[in-house]
Amino acid sequence: MATITLLDGGMGQELVARSGDDPTPLWATRVMIDHPGLVKTIHADYFAAGASVATTNTYNILHDRLRPVGLDHLYHALHLRALMEAHEARAEAGRGLIAGSMGPLGESYRPDLTPPVEVSTALYAEKARLMAPHVDVILCETMSSLDLCRGALAGARAAGRPVWLSVSVHDRDGSRLRSGEAVADLAAVIAEHPTAAVLANCSMPEAMGAALAVLSTMGRPFGAYANGFSEISGLPLPDAGGAPDYTPRHDLTPERYADFALSWVAQGATIVGGCCEVGPAHIAELSRRLRAAGHQIA
Image (tube, rainbow, N blue to C red; front, side, top):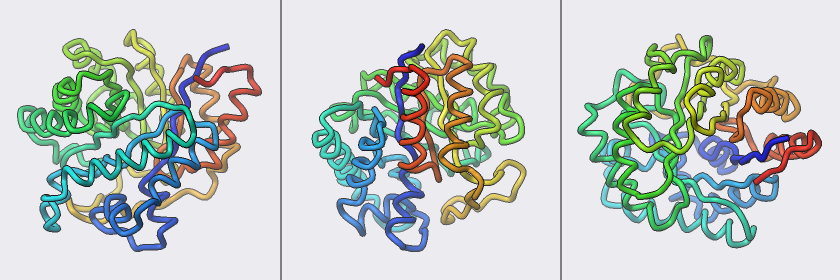
């Protein structure tokens, strides 16, 4: 039996759903501004469900998101607000890691908007330094191209914390990034940068087995946390700055999601959890199933 790090589930979609607000280009950041304390409540719900990690609501706090709506002056303050709410939830739970989330520049699922590596490195280094005193690990997540991985990993080094790299893969072929590049080519990228774990996230759970088959060869702890969206690959995607508008699935029950996650653990994954549209009920069922199978949750 294995020792499993149980991630939390999605934050952004959960925030939008609980707030009742319409999605905006600022997505989870807008909800955090308008509904103080809601981020902490969701973190607390994930800890209560059995998660051993709180992923900070900093994914979308990026200059390229804030500038168009005139809020870039709040860049530093918004990070501190998100970090505070994660810390308060952890303090009340009395356990857990805090993972500082760094999301993709440009737009999620849009590798064509990936900036040059030297640009993304500087932007991610700024973000990493800001979060470093307040997090246990830096989580570069939903990275959909090799160059975005290069920039994120190079920038994340500035934190002096362990770095987890998580990539978003093609929904119909988990052996490829959303850019079309091979997941196998990540091996050369992580060889150049300290990387404590390699993961796949924010793709359909059906794609994760193929992704993990490749990630398992890279000599790092590995894992997955899928989303609950219908297929995104191959569909027209919104331009940068548009509000996220993806279709949630209705068949991905907590029981079915746990079936997928247990299959990833059977492949050797030691870090599992959920992403968009995977909520506290899914994490609670996954926690229950992991323990029933004899696994220990770290």
